[in-house]
Length: 234
Image (cartoon, rainbow, N blue to C red; front, side, top):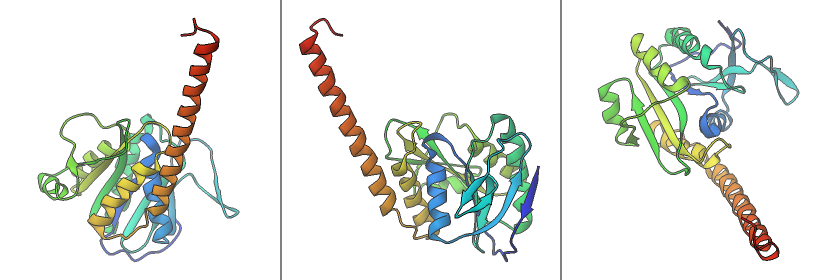
């Protein structure tokens, strides 16, 4: 693995936020909104063997699929592809070692928990004192299993002496969930005074929810009509 640095930024104890795709894409949605609202600079990209040969085009310019954006205070790790489970362990270790020389204040992993709704955000951390601080913002994820990059990154951070937390938003399922992303951003705004706008995500969530409600009502009408026309229909 290799990180190719594309810009020189003078960091001041940055917070490193991992926003790779996962359940409901809530982390990716929140990460993208931070990049856009804070006008973060394209900082560099990861070369990872065996990932999909996909190139992202933005305003006519090609970008690698796994990349980083930054300013002096924040580094956002973003990916357009789902990282293979077989690459997670090595990439988590590589992320910690890559940014250890930037004197990071904290690593933050963003993810989702499938709950059939988008209401709460839960927290995990690799130190007891971080758990106590998280209680001021979220409910602690007391017991369970965390997949993907999140838990692995926290373990690698602990092994290398870095503080790390994970924020896990409830999400409706596998489809993109802007409300879950907005819930993550609301917590991040409070924790780090980001002031990232979440109104557009809420509007997008409401539009999706209204469309799903409309589709459900149409489905019920079709079912009702079928029962009348075909009494034996089940």
